[in-house]
Length: 127
Image (cartoon, rainbow, N blue to C red; front, side, top):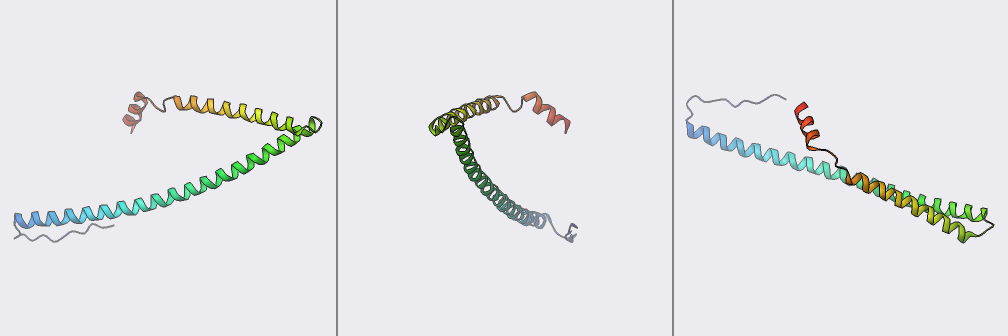
């Protein structure tokens, strides 16, 4: 993209130059605002598509977990002489233990700082 240079009039005075500077500044500001609007519109569109995909993935995951729970409860119920209630109870306990373990790991990783001041300084200094 080539830079367009405006022809300079050697007879133009300082008031003309200041006026031109004001006009150019206004145009530049308007162009920047327009560019920001376009970038924001694109970012919001991408975010919307991402949220939609996450929602669909969550829904599919919930349905899959319900199906797995029913399969496991039925399988255990058949193994223990047809006592489906025992299969459901064992499956529920196993899922609670796994859920508590996942919560504990998530809280532990959340408690760790993602970075330290020294690490931030190293990243900034190496750029």
